[in-house]
Image: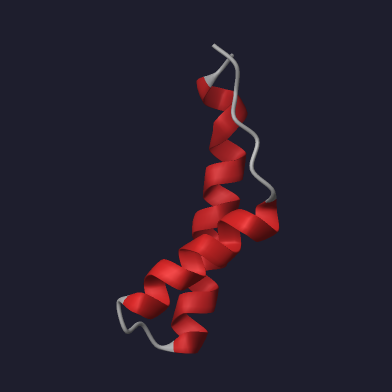
Length: 49
């Protein structure tokens, strides 16, 4: 099984879009999107080793 690679900015923007659609306050959405993206990126390799 090969790992799917998604650019950080693309993933961040998608999280941001979803949070905005859920009426999340912009500053909170930006912080959450960054945290979710960092966590996702950090976890990718640990699940495929």
